[in-house]
Length: 278
Image (cartoon, rainbow, N blue to C red; front, side, top):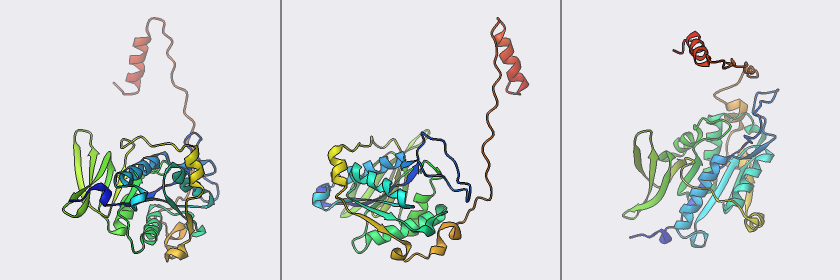
């Protein structure tokens, strides 16, 4: 019978550099891509990082051979997402940085990230790929499923808890997914891909020692050529979807103000009726 300490885990976590939600979001004028000048590590990815760290720690931690690797793709500034992940606790980082990636949609992004995961796995393999349930910029939740398909991995998405158990000698991911009226308990053999919700844990925050230690952790920058990916398959050239035009949302009109002179209730009913809401 295996115990957690006898089975170190090698986990890859996908992280993304996204516009800070404290600021208004906007598109660039020249190609209608998201303006990322004020960006941070996606908040939802912090839950994925915490889930990975807890699983590795339960399996004996880095001293027993376990590892959490944070990976991202994007322009130069996207490396800050990986640096933050290293401060939080990831042991190693990879940044896929290539000009040809600009304009990648979900299909191109998943193709590039799948190639990066294969590159990282090498001969040793990866036990788990963990992602947030969505990015806070696109909010499509498409990339995790597409990466799993490209890597031929079983996928368990939108989970609120996850643990590693054993079926004989075979490691199994056991996860819980909360529905509106019920709860599913799902199992998948490793290696697998799992996306987690913001209900799974409470992410840790880096202290001063963690921030200093992160500077010494390995952070690798790779290109499409390193991965053997054709530039025409990603970016604007390989996108399955394009944005032809965009315009700002029309400003909201001022609402109707009802002055209460003893008949506010009647005025409200009359208004709702005029809007065919009654």
